[in-house]
Amino acid sequence: MTLVEKILAAHSHKKKVSPGEFINVRVDLVMANDVTAPIAIKEFQRIGVDKVFAPEKVVMVPDHFVPNKDIASAEQAKLMREFAYEQQILYFEVGQMGIEHVLLPEQGLVLPGDVVIGADSHTCTYGALGAFATGMGSTDIAAAMATGDIWMKVPPTIKLIYNGELRKWVSGKDLILYTIGDIGVDGALYSAMEFTGEAIDALSMDNRFTMANMAIEAGAKAGIFRVDNKTQLYVKHRAERPYLVYEPDNDAEYSQVIEYDVSAIEPQVALPHSPANTKPVSQVGNIEINQALIGSCTNGRLEDLRVAAQILKGRKVHPRVRCIIIPGSQQVYLDALTEGLIEAFIKAGAAVSTPTCGPCLGGHMGVLAADERCISTTNRNFVGRMGSPKSEVYLSNPAVAAASAIMGRITSPEEI
Image (cartoon, rainbow, N blue to C red):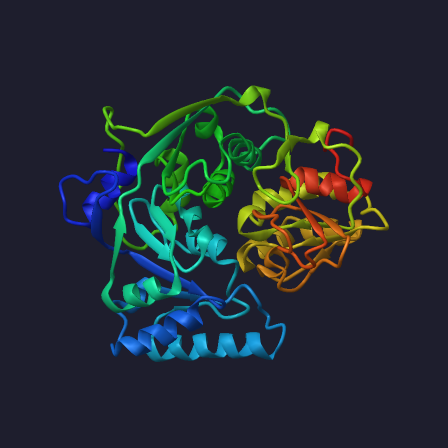
């Protein structure tokens, strides 16, 4: 069996599972946010169950429209908060919270070998820890909150092998953008993407989270990494419960095996209006920008902010560019503050926000007007994703976004 099949078999009390098989799976964690939880809560109440299956295994994170941007978002957060208090489940209030997919691993709530479902498509982020994590709809989440079970079809696994050594300024974001550019937005449809190879072994945990996060952008059910020493070190001081590490069998069957030589890859930019519309930064051409956004569940971790600060420190954001930087959690914010990164951002002329998904989904804190262009470290650049349907979003890593903020046009950090 593959890594994903091993985890699913263990959670469905079976010796073996195969792609295409329908199974009932026991979950270790159920998560919802301020957009998806209200629907899940209403469906849960309709089922007629009094209590969630296990309060310590249900988590609510308000992060999309918080601090609340209007009355509607305040009502959503209120409904979620009151349900969390009533059910005595984990709730991360403003001031303690962060962007869900940064926060949950950081808080030790997701561990290797877990099955995690979230009412958010980027739940696949947790695959970086060797967990099977996937997004589901709010009604599925309601059923899981009531029973602790989900039913699903076992996905086939695509093995992606990354050989060679990364160039300077090339990160996990570039590997996943390059991969999506190669296989397309449906290239891994309802499959698990298993990321392996020497270049993957060399990646930091922050970079692995970024890659797993965007598996959904290739249509994948999950993205997953094997657990190694880096994973164990990350989890060691966070885990407050036992966990199991699973390994794929040597004779595991994969639906596809794809290999890449990363030494040939330069920083990537996804042009409008698809994450698959990628080009090397050197081939993008002269594209002026109005906004640069560094943050989100894709690139709002400490390492991402360090890379941005390396470029912004001692320099100035272009006078015609709004540079918005959003740490992924309160802990990331605090660490960035301690390291002097926040000071560097503010002196460079950037705005630094409390943790929020905000602008990524065109919510608040950086919505685009018609004909505006933004370079963003987020994960999606569909029409109208960050505001006006007449705006354009370009996706990149934090180094490219920071360099572009300074120059006022999309450029490589090499130029800076």
